[in-house]
Figure 1 (cartoon, rainbow, N blue to C red):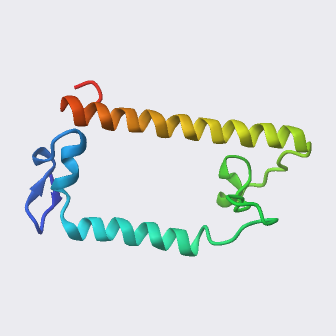
Figure 2: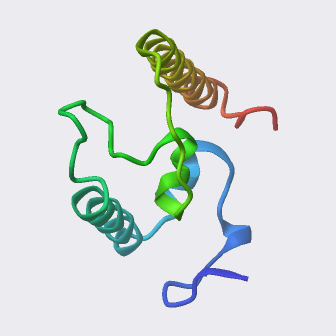
Length: 112
C-alpha cells in the first residue's frame, strides 16, 4: 500500500527508526503540525480551577466521552495520583529518548 500516493511513497519504502522521518513529505509534516495545533487551540484550550493540565476530562479522560467520574475527593489521594502520573510521564519520555539515542548511535531501531 501507499503511504502517500501523490508522492509515490509506499510503506515498504519507509525504514525503521529515525531514518523514517526523512521519508515523510513536507506536506505531511505540515498536516501533522496543523492537526496538533488545531487540537491544542480548540480542544485543550481551557483550564479548570486554574490548574495547568486540568482540562476537566476526569479520571482516564472518560468525561470527554460522555461518562462521568466523581474524581478523587481526598486532596492527598489526588495529589499522590497526580504525582504518580507526572513520574510515569517523565519515565516514558526518558525511555523514548534512550531509544532515539540507541537508534542514532547503532542504527538499530529498538530491537531490530
